[in-house]
Length: 214
Image: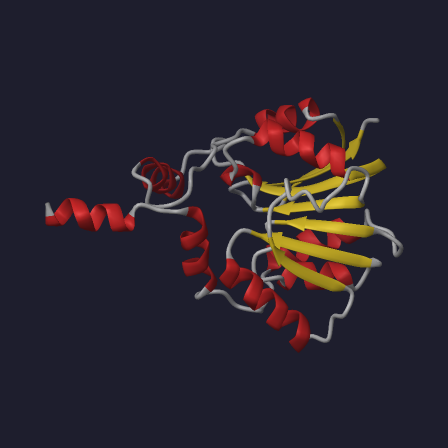
């Protein structure tokens, strides 16, 4: 009975999981994040309004904001948003805002954003087709989706097995295991045309830029 109670306490609720992750974050950007930012900003314009879906603690959001008109970062974890606001203030980035929210917030109207960012997010959502359709709706005509996603099904690794096990026993959020082509298919089925793809790591961390079809 005691063991079962302990397990139930450990079983993950996504918001609580990401709050715990937030406590171990750093404001330093690694090589993969820097490459991601460089690729992303090459597709953005100075007058763009951008939504960062799953912004985390905001370090990438704040860097992107330096090259566009405005960025709004959203995340389900209140601790992440708290850190994102702190980092923006510390870095004196004043064209960014952060909100604990999701894509289906009624405050977000169709055709509101020139670009949507989704870095290290899509493999953690359970309803990817619905998410992609919502992104499509929120983007302006010709708007772009910029993503970077761990394609955990592409290559065998010990990390893949561990993540699969932790996800199955609900010690971390539900995780989708994509191959690169499977991820591309999900994105194009959401009404997007692929513009650029790149492997950022051997995992691979798969970077995709896709344009709204209509």
